Length: 238
Image 1: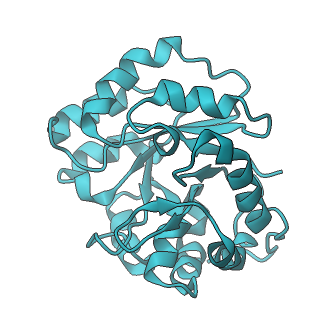
Image 2: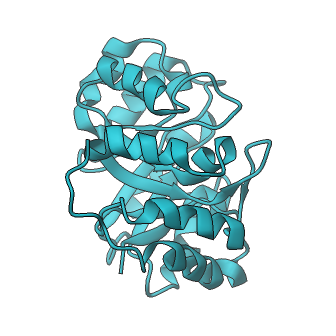
């Protein structure tokens, strides 16, 4: 089974402790993304790391703030740099104003593709510009963002074919017209099946669907149904 887990922010916005506790009740969950999506959540996350029970998890990442309101870029970078070195840091291109800072993260910098509200990182060409600027950076493919832009998933496939060698994790959810993260239902699941066989079996699936605790098992089932049956192509990625 593919490594799978939730973003704590999808389960409990602003409360990573509760989000982590909720998913630890699921035996199949072996991955987690600790969310500091709003910048005022970043310091509490760092302050609370020592007391977190991460036992039994094979993969941990952190989602950086998507917008800087209370923190400036330099402070945000300094706080993120203090995270454990093994944890990828998922970053939206829009918060990067000083590339020389972020290049210091090397492969810990994991750039996520964007939805239709953004102006950078939405497709393979825009990601190419970013990876030229950050040659060591890795890639978080958000399949919901890609589907929002192109229901045929051609954009997602182009990103995988060109940048798949950098792939570190996936974000999985359906995404509405205003960027809202929704549960994966039949149409989204069928779309995700188109890209699933191009995603390595060991690539973690991080669910961003906003669901209630009683819906979590069903959401894991829906995501695994889209990805578990697909076989990875043996041909090398471009």
